[in-house]
Image (cartoon, rainbow, N blue to C red; front, side, top):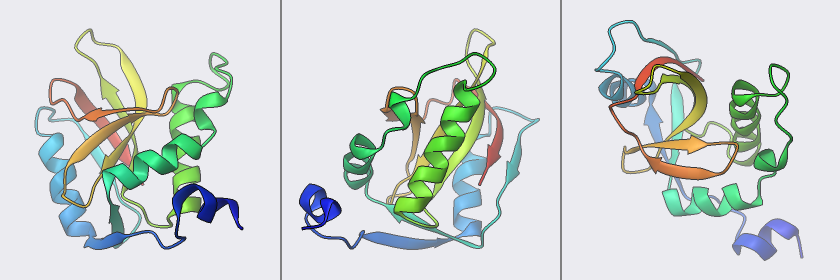
Amino acid sequence: MNIFKKLFGKTEIQKELASDNFVKQVLEGICCKNKGYTIYLTQERYYLVDLDRFERWLKSDFTDSKQYINEFFDCSHFAFQLLVSANNWCPGIALFWISITKEDGTKHAMNLLIDKHGDAWLVEPQTDEIKKFDRRWGVNLIIK
């Protein structure tokens, strides 16, 4: 039995197709606090997946097990690695690389998932922690 079937039951990922306009509206809605944000979308359509399904996949991903190396494999590299891994699992998934400014003024790279309900979730690729997007953190850059 293939390992994917063993872990998740079936190989088909339940997903819904969304246009880049829908995705951009969600992203602009979370960026509303900042005036100087930039969004780069490279696709015309994205797949929205169930949050529970994404969490199950995330547990099987090894990005969080990589060693942090300042400047050479830091938060930006973790976020990029998770983006690549997720796209191998579900090509076109509505998962993005983002740069945020926290309340204390520090910048941090993470991932942002838009689920099948159009809700935005911050994903910390170094720990696999997922939490609802907090508008108190300013988004500077979103790339996909």
